[in-house]
Image (cartoon, rainbow, N blue to C red):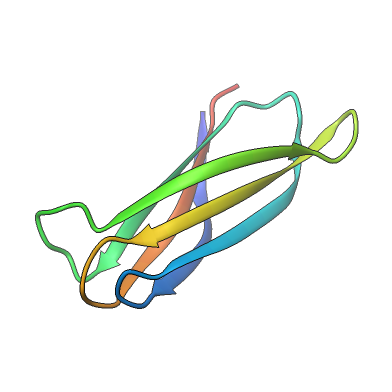
Length: 84
């Protein structure tokens, strides 16, 4: 398994935004997760949805939609884990 940070982001209160990352191997199993970096409180701060689009037989693009669930600006890291 390999993990890393792909991008960082910031969302205004209740804002939703879409990011993408491309060129991933279509044969890999990639898990995406968003980790808030500020502010840090006990309740969930963001939710996200992941969509995969095949670019060709060997590559794909991930579309990541992240929503701020709080009444204040949230910064976060978009992290991934490659499981194969």
